[in-house]
Length: 289
Image (cartoon, rainbow, N blue to C red; front, side):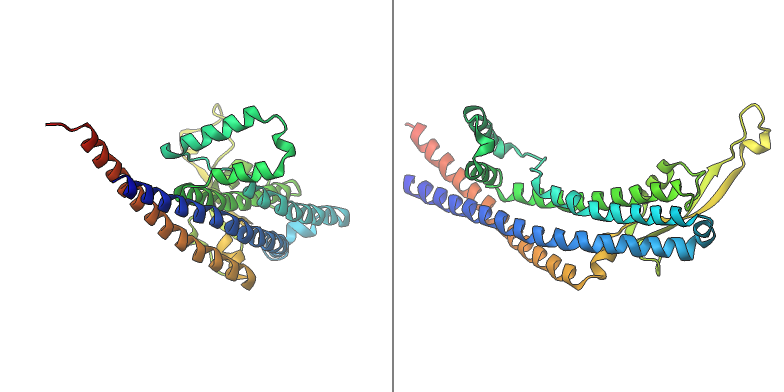
């Protein structure tokens, strides 16, 4: 029985080693993907801004002075350049959903930090310690999910930042609170996006009249105003569709993701077998007639 347990633990260790190999592969894939994505985001921001200013709100754009137009265009380019740093920061995040079986690993990591004062000056130790966080396949999968959610969050943040600038220049309706526009972006259902307007949000927003409470009649209290809003909303599916390189890189990530899911199934199957073998051994060791 001891030999069987030892063999199962060796198999678990091999699967953990395979998981850490996957971590490095995922990092390289995401590094390339996020670099390409940041370039595409910058281009799509410019294209969406051009479409919005010239086809959706042409009169508002024409009313700007030449210098104002230039300043707005500079803001568009500036926000696009910020995409690279924001997206690459996602790779530095650690898994937030720590499962019970990983607590001992994190405790060992914290002990290492406390005993090593010059940890920040030791890249090799940093890498080794970082990989220890990902020995379990489910922790790696949580990290991947966190990155993908982070990408959507960054795209929404960039969209909101640009919409705020468009409101400052009175391209978008200035009477709408920016919180309303942000909520419209976050509430949009991907399946219901409007066709023909990549990375543009086209919605009707109901707002209350600005009549003060003391001036309102009973009829006015129930009145509301419908405002048509077309704003920037970067969508990952549309950005990937416009860039064949992104589509290919995403396909590579998904392929490795499928392998990781299979690795997780193998790992927890072996872990269960090991637990059963240890329990059987413990039962025999304590049993007596």
